[in-house]
Image (tube, rainbow, N blue to C red):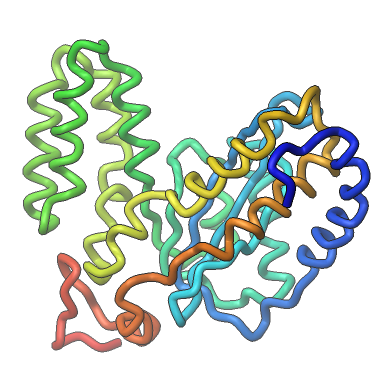
Length: 278
């Protein structure tokens, strides 16, 4: 893959890329089981031809802990309809069993669509997105301190300690910066779902980082491309760069825990509960 993608290079390669992308979009998923999925709507420069459109991305982790790009198409981040189409397409291609957990930003239209298409999938809000949203509603002068207090919540060893840190944050900042605190409180339960999953997986499922970190590479590699991208060029280019980055993705830690999740064994504060096997 060339480092700087000139217009000439792009036009020569984009037809092949588009064919590869279309074939990938149709691949059968019937023999696979995905336990975790991460979702995000990502903008990158140059923008797609339709200003508000972005790339809707879903990454999955299968029963062996392998991460894989499951879906990538253009759409609208906040649109339930856009995400519904993505999820229904995954189902049509064989993703019959509901993933156990979905991770993403609270602002996505993804959540309403998820409840319709994969009704039993549990929800985890991304702590990176949430931290940014909360801090953006606070004055610069207190952001560093507030960030530390948010960190105390999602780095706590147990759900009880996380809830204590959560209450502390609300009490400390709620009077003066009620709008910022409201952003946190509205997703309280969905921010702490990860405590019901193996501790080895926490670093993977507290954020939608598998998508964000990969797209940082995509952004870096496309920044020299001038002007506005057509839908086909934008998607084909992002797809090729994602597939290139995908080779470096690491498997989940704690792969031995994945069969236990499939069996429905209960985890509390990241620890397997021996008394409960569904």
